[in-house]
Length: 312
Image 1: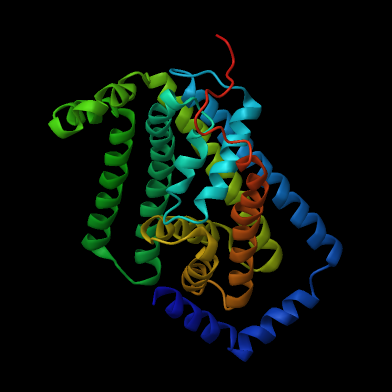
Image 2: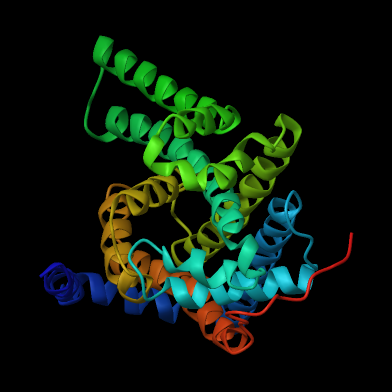
């Protein structure tokens, strides 16, 4: 039903002849060489993005298993392949940890959870603060209500930062749940990451956000040169924020992503089709193409035997 609704909304947007005419005019004004260079840059940034994620994953694994950078890269791409077929990318956990020895895979899930938490924290911080700006700017939330809204946004952001940098408190909470007793030795990994290690993981995650935000910004600025820069960044952050709240499959995510982008960017531009095309392009480059690459590494998964590792 959800897919049907998304399909109908996409049809409604794309059947708007005025929007299509604007998009066609925009494309005629875009130099093909510039477009080729732009796509090359976007693919290069995609590789940089997943290289950073591979470095982060290797670092996350250090407390319990040493792996090479290449093996980390293989597992990241394999995880992307599994992710596109599962809601909210939960399959990425399975695809990635299967490159670890069987006895270390649950540790891998916990470690991956910490890495994912860092990304979620950043997304929620930039998203919530952008939402405060959006509500004040476009929905006319002013006066004391505006101040209260910003205070709530700052408290919300602070709570996420506290949750991340005091993740060991989560381990204490889990230790009190008796039905999780047999998993406690795995959850104890949460206490092994020291503040300087969590800071480094957070920095890797921040770099990743910077890279894929650059992809959106570069493509949007090329497709819609008149787009104001800082409002555009806020809308990109709102798009990330909305994506964390919407349960979707990566395989069909282009529809939800395009419609969400169209809604938010509709407040600062009339080029809705160009916005949807940009969002779909980034979706293909960052999710679908890497998933196709990862399908090669799926064949290397060792389900039962010990995976090769790097000696300490």
